[in-house]
Image (cartoon, rainbow over all chains, first blue to last red; front, side, top):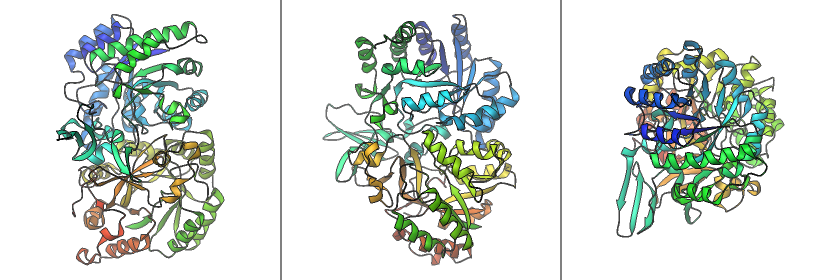
Length: 331
Length: 295
């Protein structure tokens, strides 16, 4: 079972590799990837350095090209595919059928993974991508329960990778338009959820208001933590109450499920967070490396250590974690 | 340009659905999409009911398409999907790649609904090769993008534009209607039945923002492209889709039909009165989806 860690920049990449990541995934410095934020991602120079660092230590690099090009940007995605192929990366993670088609035809030796943004939640969908584009692996959206993950894995030859830790998308990835509805840019079109330019923090007499595209997403009292305003983690009014209508600010943590994921044949655990700091990557990679090693050694006896849970809790959104959809009661 | 009536996105009682489709037979729409697209637990209308309704509407002269679920997780859902895909009589709308796979493997033509991601002509070509006959663009795509795709697209594939209704924006494993009532999903008590047009979520400033419809999240605002028809025509759109709502659907279809026949925009009725809480057309204008040019 591989540990796949996020690398939003060179220091994060080094931190992940130093702490024992088998693979780092990264994106180019533009809207061809789903973490298109200022100051993140790789240019030619940092990419060369990063590749050297990873390869000299016998690990792997995946390139995420996981947004949906519109005709206006199509050339940019083609160039990005070619670039990844030239670099001989270990896999290209893509979502769009046009991009996958181009990559499969133009670079038949480039291993393809279906991104979580490809939004495939069942084995019939995977079959399509396998037959048409020869995908080797798919990252499953964070909407499946543990038995459903197992069922998908049992019914496909495509390798299965799942999210283990990080910010929790409560909507099925690749088909969530909440960000563009409020702010004009979505993960699919622009590679970002809640574009920073549309985010406002406004201090009021009672505390802090957070807005996206002018929409009041949340309001906290003085001294409370105001989270980054993503639509799905806001507080709204319905049925005469104000509440987190979709989800509270929280992170996914599946450490408890590690033996089950291993038994289900899941080949890789993905850590979310290319937008997070190198310190976050270091901390999370360290815990998960220990946990995976411990689980591989003795799956039956595996118990997440208390200190691991505390360390992961400390870098979580809202300082709390959940098993999310893996656990039926969450749904 | 033809007019279509999309699938009913909400959970209506059996009687209400029967009444509704009796009226649809008389509405000035050419195509009707039938079926449950949101939640597998909504079973007041079964496969045979949909098929019977489909046959009745076909007899009334409608082109019928069977719609399928957009988020497929359980084997039971795939089983229902297989049954619809092999119905043997009617064209099927795929709303997930599972349906695309089943239909293309069976050599059947299909429609791709708004939750099959087609953002460029290369993707359109892949799907045309798999049997795509008509596609409904993701609601977030604007006119410039659609024009650019149309330029490269093969003439054999038709485009159907989501032109009226609360827009499907997201789906989740979690049921937000059950959550609103503090109920677990497995014991949701079918509260969706109480919200025939979804449950409106307002911001804490009282602005209508989203609408909850089980595991689906919609825009609270109604997409309205009625005043854009001349531009829509120049794009070469083949079908305009109206998404059903609990009231006024017949009236809305009638206004669209009249507009297509050339009735002047200045004579259009006040469409805002036909919406649950207000309109929007931002996506069409390449802006945030909730923006509205007519405010």
